[in-house]
Length: 173
Image (cartoon, rainbow, N blue to C red):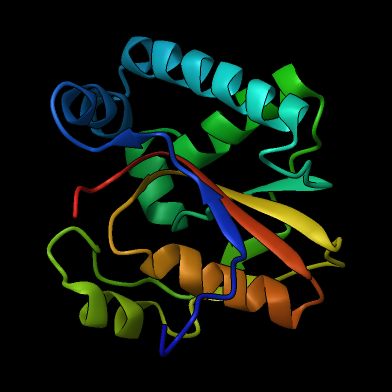
């Protein structure tokens, strides 16, 4: 890889395609948490097994992907935070909700290609406090990996040494 990401590994068990895409969309955009709950429960079980058998290293803290405050207000919740808090509670891993934040508003990533996403997110995250060595970024879907890359870079610059990305699904391809 010419430009390796700042994160060292990822745990993303499913593809963002039928029927998961519809379930995640209804959960994320329509606030219908009943569609997210079974996915998060299954994801937690998969993580618990992977942590138990050593396939996945136990992070010191979970960092939900920060959301723009206006977008959070419009949706009523941050799905990454919701996922992280559920996993953290079930697996007894602390969640650092305020460890990173967005410092400026950006265009929606939905219609942008990988290069445009990376450019759009440049300098968007700020780490607000001390960072442990082992962290896991939590998000719902990884599309191009731009958010994970930029957030992982900010966390690495702040002192994290082992950064994982945990997400429900990834886009095919």
